[in-house]
Image (cartoon, rainbow, N blue to C red; front, side, top):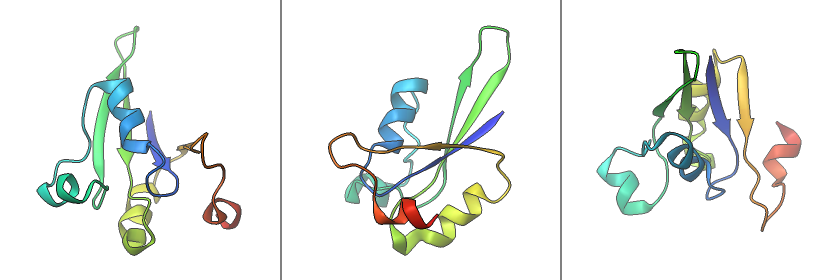
Length: 95
């Protein structure tokens, strides 16, 4: 199963995947410098039955919409991340 993240910038998508998988999906130096996902990132979680769940971490910033669409285009499952301290953003309502 492949799951893509979706959500507004700085709402914890990459941090959640790191907590679940131990993998930092932000791999580019520019992502580290700016503290935001720019390109698609990938993380994997082994399941108890020997399977694997794959995650695609997509950018949340509107300037990287093309990258986000490339990441979610063929995915059948999505994980919508909403920051508990900020709530649902306008982009969520129009998605």
